[in-house]
Amino acid sequence: MSQRVPVDLAKSYRLLNHGPTVMVSSAAGGRINVMSAAWSMPLDFAPPKVAVVIDKSTFTRELVEASGEFVLNVPTRALARMTLDVGGASGREVDKFAAFGVGHVPGSVVKAPLIEGCVAWLECRLIPEPQIQQAYDLFLGEVVAAWADPGAFEDGHWKPEQGGQRSIHYVAGGHFFETGEAFEIEGVR
Amino acid sequence: MSQRVPVDLAKSYRLLNHGPTVMVSSAAGGRINVMSAAWSMPLDFAPPKVAVVIDKSTFTRELVEASGEFVLNVPTRALARMTLDVGGASGREVDKFAAFGVGHVPGSVVKAPLIEGCVAWLECRLIPEPQIQQAYDLFLGEVVAAWADPGAFEDGHWKPEQGGQRSIHYVAGGHFFETGEAFEIEGVR
Image (tube, rainbow over all chains, first blue to last red; front, side, top):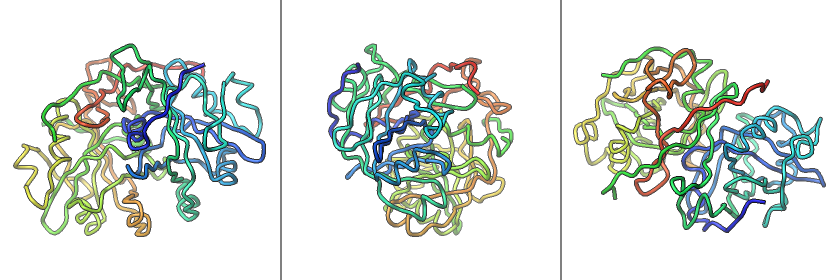
């Protein structure tokens, strides 16, 4: 089981700022589900908000619209196959947790689960915007709790050069990039 | 001057799918400007659409709202300092192109310029959604032309392992990640 420590909400945007691919978990009416999303981003600092694209055809969408909640989970290369697997199947047809061996624990504030083995988790409450949900499949959320594996992200900073597991960035057709070398530009602000 | 070849619109989402930081360029009424944005993402495949966060305080916002157009430019590590510089100054106060040595050429479809030295460019027409622009600083656009440096992206694929320049991913406080190692998960769909 992955370690998990709270992340200051004011710094939670840093879990997504570099554009990793996420898994979106959800729960409603006793059902839970998980899908993948390459299309998510921070939307604001305070209160922290996020945006994520959730297709009309997905079971996730049904659960998110019913519960008004979701979690963005940041997977690592070790979970890349799982990320594709849960992105390629529908929770209407299979229990993806059982089928793909997806471990999960309950969220702290929302009912949607946190996916085991990830390095960061953002628990979100939906900001209802039915018109843009309908027109663009675009969902906005306020981050109400955030967590990170302290081996990967601690005190507001990613630790890739200290052996921390790296997040991943999906391109297309099974092709990913790992999050790469960290570098700093000095003397800026 | 960077090379530039057209990218099939159907594959243009791949220029942004892995979550790189972008520069947003704009033009209206004879003025041009450029800022940086870590918060952008693809929004749809066909027609290709994007979403980007543009703060109310920015001159870019004024030009985008006046012209209904913008370009997302994907910079490399060689442009990391420029990316921070154009993100930290306002085009109301300084000519950022002169102050920071930002080369540019005209867009092909939109009036906003393409920034030299980048590896990809998405020319976008604003999809007006005044309510979400006002409430969330969130701007949607349809990609109407796309370009890439063929040394970095060709035939719909990034070429990082062939010496292609890599895109960058901003975290905070001058800290970036480079786009890292490419890997493929086989046998998926």
